[in-house]
Image (cartoon, rainbow over all chains, first blue to last red; front, side, top):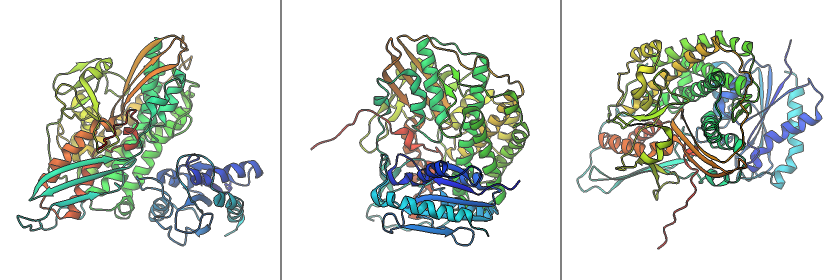
Amino acid sequence: MRRPPLVIGIGHRLRQDDAIGPMVIDRLRATEPGGRMDLLELSGEGAALIEAWDGREAVVVIDAMRSGRPPGALVRLDAVVEPCPADTFRHSSHQFGLAAAIEMARVLGRLPRRLTVVGVEGERFGFGDGLTPAVADALKEAMALVCAAVTERP
Amino acid sequence: MTGPRAGSRKPARRKASAPPRVIKVDALARVEGEGALYVRVKDNVVQDIKFRIFEPPRFFEAFLQGRYHAEAPDITARICGICPIAYIMGASHAMEDALGIETTAAIEQLRRILYCGEWIQSHVLHAAMLHAPDFLGLDDSLQLAKQNPDVVVDALRLKKLGNTLMEVIGGRAVHPVNTRVGGFYKAPTRSALTELLPELRWGLEAAARLARVFGGFDFPRFEDDYLCVSLHHPDIYAIDRGRLIDNRGLDIPIEAFPDHFEEQHVAHSNALHGVRKADSVPYLVGPIARYNNNFDQLSDNAKAVAADCGLPRVVRNPFQSILVRMVESFYAVEEVIRLVEIYQPPDPPAIEPVIGEGEGTGCTEAPRGVCWHRYALDDTGHITAAQIVPPTSQNQPRIERDLLGVVEASLQLEDEALKWRCEQAIRNYDPCISCATHFLTLTIDRE
């Protein structure tokens, strides 16, 4: 049986704007009818990401980013056709995060057929919960981008 | 498998009165947490070397005070996302010691399978994805995947196997939720584990294969006569229990650890520095210490893998830690197969405690080495005192000592190559820096 698209929310719930990925997953879990998409929350560790999307047809990843854009800015990237900027999606000093996972999966032939990355520019990544206002304002639009990517047909 | 060697460049010529040469690595990549290294060299003599840890101190020992004893395993697991089982087990054993709980053999066997899962995923991630690129002159595992995709494919699948064990037994791969003081909330069924046997048998082959590939690396020449400290058990390669020994004749119960070892503050690091108490000598914990102290307890097959990849009976070259990690990964897979084949779900899955006042100690072998816990409880089962000694704070003085030796032996290298060699030497320890910064007392110098 064909599996539904997978949405992966990346981030840490207690590092302020880094929580945007998990929060989108929470909202989708509450609002989406069952079966239309699979939902998964991950820390962003690269090996786990490759495992999660291995063998999938369509995957959408939502993550906070730090690219120099204004807080709350949204970026949509088709990772199958364009490289993921290495410094935009930070994970940890292990430096095997989303960008490295995408590029490694590309080298190993383990990218899903469709992989869309939705990035939300964060402002603060310190200790604590709660999004900063600009990022909280972008939550709804981020969800719309994720849902649009899920329903697209190749 | 060979690649460009970091040390193959021509030595730099230096005048006798050259200004001090400073090597700084400000944000160290491919280790867990945040650390930095500072080396000062003048007239080809090392003047100063500091391995700095600047992760914010994490006050675990303080905020455990007043918490209920049953919370300690789950709270301390948050010290590390790579080795939560080490903290869960150390804290659980300590609480069981404090409350006089005797678990069953079936519970301990299931715990050992879980712990092996953590060893596999932690060791393979570090050895293949983070450390191996150093030996090939590659910047990262992506370059490794381009050059040798089979290694990366094997490593990712083997790491996944470790994660799967943690998910099946612990409920999830990071920060498991099915463990508790006294055992488990729910024991997995026999079939949930036996269905992993085909993948485990593949894992045994894969671990041996990776060990052989890494055995072909060119290892920088550096040796030291390490003071090796580890758990030891006469019948089995010590992971989850045993006495503490060193390779100079020490043999003590885990409770006596603070009588022989201590942690010292140093100005340049947030992590405490572990040393032997009598003479402030640094000591080594982790794969090489375990291998040197407990070689006899390895299985015959694991000993054969060690021989195949070129490991001597006693390892003195820290760069060979990558090989020991693969031998231990092989052993861990083999051990899981052995235990899964005889597995019967523990019934009951946990032994209920009788709450009361007490003091208890727990000590296990985290992937990076000895992880020691002690707690005191009041008569309601709440924590009144906590002390945790993680492996990286114990290894930190040893890392600095190695760096001194490596720098002195490699001064002919140009700065970039020397920097590379230093980072490689730090990664020999797979330092989990976020684990090592959880101390309570802050020392502030004021002028």
